[in-house]
Length: 74
Image 1 (cartoon, helix red, strand yellow):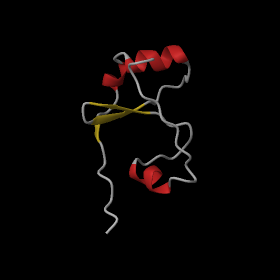
Image 2 (cartoon, rainbow, N blue to C red):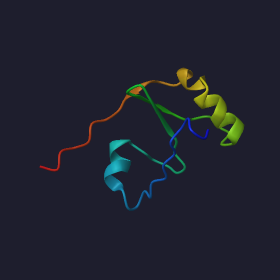
Image 3 (cartoon, helix red, strand yellow):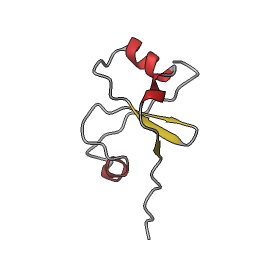
């Protein structure tokens, strides 16, 4: 996926605000962001081939969700 996808790892204990914002319940949890929408990876297999298939278009079979707006610090 080099040059095509940015991957980030989040420490759930250290980033509760992010965990709550994206409703992450378990780890690992993969969310694909594309064109202002987010798609949750929920395939049973977590291997390179399945992830590549998801990113190459299978994500369209997942529910497109709006990206939640961060809560104001005020």
